[in-house]
Length: 142
Image (cartoon, rainbow, N blue to C red):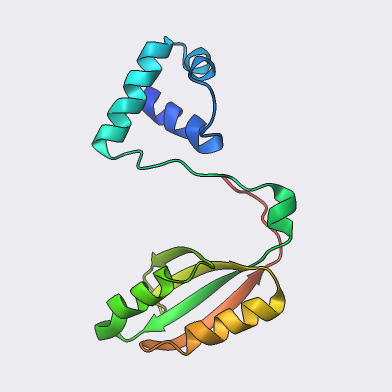
C-alpha cells in the first residue's frame, strides 16, 4: 500500500501525468531524485501500470456517452467480456453487485452510432438484458 507521500504523488499524476518531476518535487516538498525513486517504486510494484492522455473538454463535448447495465448468462461472462474488450467505444467495464452483472461505459461520435453500438451489445451471445442511460453532463471528473 502506498505511503502518504506516494498517495499524493499518485493523485498529482492522475491530474496530469506529464507534470515535470521538478514541479512534483516542489509540491511534495522532496527532491527530484526522491520523486523519481517513488515513481520507479510505484511502477515496479505495479501500482502505476501506465500513463494516458486526458482529452479536452471540447473533444469530449462532441461525444455521446452512456452507461449500459448488462445482465449476462453466467457461463458466457468471459465471452461477453472478450467481445466488449474488442469494441473501441467501450471505455470502462465494471462487474457489479445487484440486479445487473456489469456496467459498461461507452462513447460514440453520434446518437446514431450509439444506437448501433447499443444494438450490437444487446445482440451479443450471453447478454440477456440491457438498460442504458445517456450521460447528459459530467459534473465531477477526477
